[in-house]
Image (cartoon, rainbow, N blue to C red):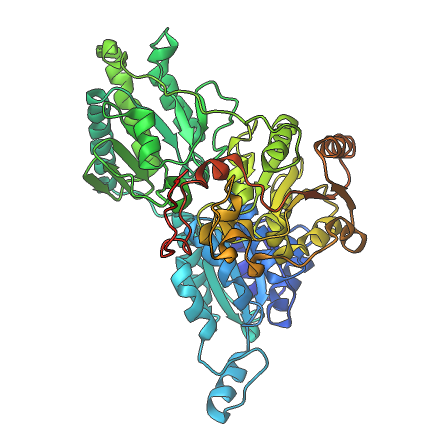
Length: 596
């Protein structure tokens, strides 16, 4: 907290409240509209907040998001409109995936705002539309405040920060430049998240009892460990629940195990003996796991597109619990806090085990998930991820981008809790490279290992320069196949089939030209950005690069991994023969006579 005797200002209030809730990193691009806050932080040599500059606002936004996923609230500072507009994508991703990011947007002064309205003068960075920035961010934040009055500032700041802690989602501040140094009252009390009421606790207990009853009626159960276990720090409570259930069994087939999904991969270390794999929980996959006589119990799990194959999996055989609500079959229990639900579910199993342990005997695990296929030493997605899976260490955090990298990475065995980061719901390409910056800031003793396609790398490659400037040892593997592979697959998967359908319309037999990428010499970019570049074209060269990287833990690397244009992860290879592209549906040759 500020202890000097200068006049206490709105900037001081902001700084002290940020420090109080644990913010110790701010990412962004400097601008004069936020200088009052940044100068106040820099002037306090005892402040724990480190101000990090970034190559651009998008890199700052993704870095802040990744940091906050692992460490707690982070903050962004930008300049009105020209800076803030670039962050709409990143903040929307944080909102969708429940990440507590604080966006601080410096705005023109009150005087400039009034002159603009009265005289029609268009100041720098303004559109002429009144308060356009805050209107833009309100739909993707849980609180948005325009701070232009020093007397009101403390109440606005405290209210928004309370929403941040309670909802674990982004908030937005728009602060006029002249307010930063205006005198302000000091903080009263502390910022706290909103507490549960008696009704929510009662609903949590009812939901837990209903869950136990359903599981006992359909004993072939398995848990789905969801992303909210990490978001709300409930991994240990989840493992305690499993321990309570499984400690009463001596036979392996009497235990209950768990799976994860793309969004929740590594919420529990994947070396855990009860972990059964990272899967896409489509209705057919749920059927394979539990059949008609079992229950899929999602704890802190979201039914997002990537996790469930864009299908609705709710049924009489599912329990889907998340912060603020639980579905037990068709019954819904609103306003349930996930922590309360977990505690009551554990308590219910403890009582059952004490009084009627034999009723647990039917619970059992599914079949193990398969590993990587044989790749015959050809460099491609599967051989790359197979090599990474055996190379990854507990002190590494694997960050992967949307598209084929995210799909291919699902089989990688992640040895550490929280050792995998991906934007698996919002799916903005380019997320992973700057996210690697944020991960390293959150975990200085770990190493960020980024896997990104070359199309996504084109979006945010400047983050490599940030990583070098920060003195990080991040490694960026760019899987370079020369195309937007996932976009081609969604529109027309035919080029990835083995063999492809021989269409009369030859355009359907090849990768579309608009999915081709500019040819970059990716391994040479570190010559400008900093770090070391390596280009590999074979599995042998890849293994050599991995050995070199492991021996040099003080260098940031960019590794260009050259992959054939038609290569895909094995999951896609298996799906491609029967997948139907958007351009194939109306084609007179679909389905082909010899339908695979």
